[in-house]
Amino acid sequence: MTPIAIIMMIIAIVTVWGGLVLALVNLQKHPEDEGALPEEQAWEL
Amino acid sequence: MSSSSSARPSAPVKRETFSSRRLFILSAIGSAVGLGNIWRFPYIAYDNGGGAFLIPYLMALLTAGIPLLFLDYAVGHKFRGSAPLAYRRLHRAAEPLGWWQVLVCFVIAAYYAVIIAWSLMYMIFSFTKAWGDDAEGFFFGNFLAVAEAPGLGFEFVPSVFFPLLLIWAAVIAIMVAGIRKGISRANAVLLPLLMVMFLLLVVQSLFLPGAADGLNAFFTPDWSALGNPSVWAAAYGHIFFSLSVGYGIMVTYSSYLKRRTDLTGSGMVVAFSNSGFEILAGIGVFAALGFMAQASQAAVDEVVTQGIGLAFIAFPTIVSQAPFGALMGVLFFGSLVFAGITSLISVLEVIVAAVQDKLGWGRVQASVVVSVLVAAVSLGLFPTATGLYLLDTSDAFVNSFGITLGALVTVVVLAWFLRKLPLLSAHLNRISTIKMRRTWMVLVAGIVPLALIYMVANEFISKVSTTYEGYPDWFVGIFGWGMAGGLIVLALVLTFIPWSSRSKAHHDPEYDAVVANEAKETAL
View 1: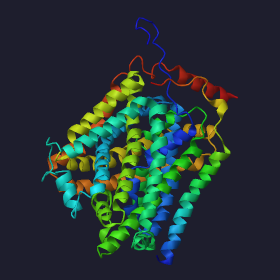
View 2: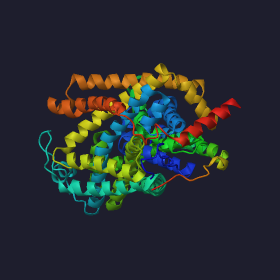
View 3: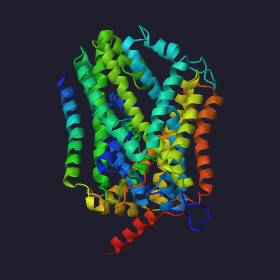
View 4: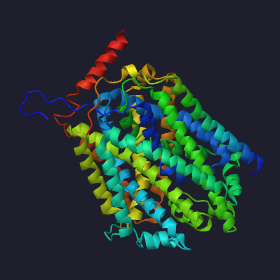
């Protein structure tokens, strides 16, 4: 592979997968509000 | 169920919910990651600047894809209904938008299942390399038995009909089981399986001789492409289709979220997971194409293709030539099957939820009636000698004048006519960690419509100037223009059909409580 292709591959992976990691970290920092869960479970089937 | 003699309508069944945010995210990713991520993105990126395409792609993701995704989330979650009910609650005049989206999903579901059925058969063919030395001849001739000219024939092709029947049986079972036991569980199993299989495929592809040449072709940037408006249009166009936005899926899925859920935080995970998968697909597909080019002593640009050509002609050729080809075939076509099923169930859910809301039906009744109806259309029209022409035409027109035009009208109506963006922004910000304020509104009201107008205009000009694919005028007129226009007319007709007395549009204590609660919170 040419150096420029390698660099672009690394940038693509780092930006997109890095964005995913940041989004996951943000979600991890704000866990689901269990207090807001419905008292009664929804009907199913 | 209470008797009809009661003066007051019986309390409607409670709306189903995803049991956790994680399952919602998995289901939304399952919906977004579909066939297009695997067979469309790699070619679009390669054809529009290679490595340089990353810049317009990221711009499109951040300025149009994600803002539109959050618009869908806000509508579905705030108004807690299927697309027609949510838009009706937003404003009576917006209800047809919801029905338009439902009808678009009907068309997509009918032909999308067919491609999954082909993939299923090719997964099996991979063991014997049934296509021999002529993958193209096998696909169009032996397998699909494609007729010489487009038309509407009923010459059934058993090798497509029966796997399609099997796919529909599996999908109906998932739909009937509901959000928690059906859709959530299917995504919780199929999505990780898809990821593992695709990762194995990528690793296998990377070890093939010539893989580096393929990656070179894929990632080498053509910076001059950035000055070409069509490259930017391609990036925006791809992002709209890739994220499953603008045709009711995310409105419907977000309506099943619990009242307090981090919408934007979850949406970011969905959007970047979808893009992450696309990058992975680009690496896997181009590594394999690099091998194919080397094996046939051709340049990579001579073998690059997309869509049906990539999946059912190029990949079988690669499977025949590669070491452990059978494994590669199973991994590739299995990935198409799993990615397809998780997307198909999300498309069907848009229709099921709308019928449930409109008629006040229970889950089982609505799922069975809707799925069987769509399956009947799918099985009746597509596994035939003329099915490929029909699939090609309906796909092209429903994408251009169903999804794209529908998204444009929706955004313009919400942002410019009904001026609901401040209300939706407030809803997103009240419960989410990443705030969507003025910038989000500017993007949704400005950048998104501009990009969509450009795309719709382009499509309109290209489809008016020449008859699509050279097919007969009557064929394109009925199954292209006629179908696309018919969806709009039918959406208006469905809007004027009264909602059942049992419908949640008339009596929904759960939604009323949410509205009352929100009003109380706002007042505090």
